[in-house]
Length: 152
Image 1 (tube, rainbow, N blue to C red):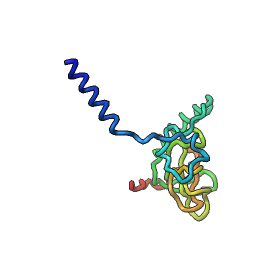
Image 2: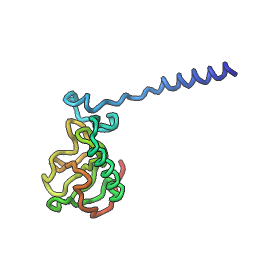
Image 3: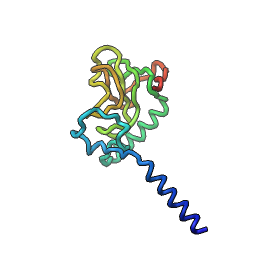
Image 4: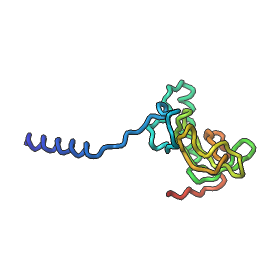
């Protein structure tokens, strides 16, 4: 019986070693070193690694609840509180450059954004030139259309 257990353990170890997982990068260590645009999925989560103070922790929790209550999903059309600008949600999640949950938007109209969905050569979503924008959940006034983004 002991021999059988040892055999099972060694075969499990052998199977684990055959399946080598690609090591995820740490975003903070790669800033300035990335030569090409890299998808955010290649990095460990959470991407933002600095310690949070009490107010920031509360903001993260509040954002999470607001996100759930709003029911925001990629593909939804939204209206921002500032200038009633309209946009399509392309990304919802955590990023490397700030704490909490961030919404990546593709702005309607030409040149209403600031980038193409990437920051420091880390791509979070794709959008047209100068139409990408990252905002906090509390910058969104309302959801205007609930068409989900088609998964590719």
